[in-house]
Length: 477
Image (cartoon, rainbow, N blue to C red):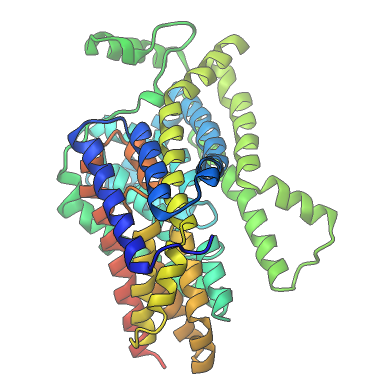
């Protein structure tokens, strides 16, 4: 859709929409799902989307978000529930803690997430890691953010700046840079920026924000028993959980690790072969490679992992009927998470469809700033305005591509620009970002707390990436 209003008016509409949304949720205590639906429609009307199209546009973006999130969250929740019930998550958590110690539990989870996050997208990786995060948190107590933020931030860092994730791959391609060099530079930059912008931030601030453990979607009732969460007696709940876990022989550490590595390996087939095909190294028409790409699609990889988990872990929990109950219990509590995340995607999608990205692009392309600063500023404004980090990455790279190619920069400087764009696309995750709602609901945070922790952490992470990019830009030719 061509923008009906100027960039300034669209920015004002977006700002007012965000402010009203926050007022409805925080002050008037509206349910986030209802508030997001209402504000999405009102924003579309204010932005000039024809009334005959608006409902279809809004539900289209809602469906697109659900298509990418619902399968991953549903399959991941089932895998997590099996790990939880059979003691697999506790086995892995205990092993991590024994190796790293209690004081470095958050660090251990973050490093593990960085390694797992290389081929796995943010939402899929976070879903698979949830039972481990909660197992560690229950063992040591305190705020769940001590353990959640390092892990979630690690997946966010890898997703933002390291190929084969779609944002950095597209940005490097648009700027005619080397995807291989972007990966080689991006991996150490991801580790360094995670340590400064996420882990240290958690130690100094986020970990001190008290958020109690709320793992309701992982700890539902089993075998027809009432849900543990429905029991007002915490002691009775804890006793029932203890008895249940004692009835199941915990799996070996190697089996649990293998289940976590399985989707990593399958997705690596997909990303690796796709990257080689894009570079012209691997053939396009090859049945074996096509099959590996297929089983490496994230939903398919998680489905295969779930089937393996049912066979290797589920049989420990009891009869097929018991397994069915376990999996059914995993799905009920995640409905709100999925719907709110879809509504968040709808809000961001309506903003994009209204033309805010195109209007901003036209107004920002000729700022006259140094290339690396322009990359960060344009990407940041696009990120804040419409929510999607991938859209901010790809749009900014497209805007700067002509200037970058004309400047005849070295391969390393092009990588620095990709990092700067990724940095801007990372900062200030807020209510128009579906990832914001995913984190908020997974860890049981209200909107205000999520803004104080997740939004600030994403900003410190993005700033850390940008500082490293600027240093590399000026230190190396």
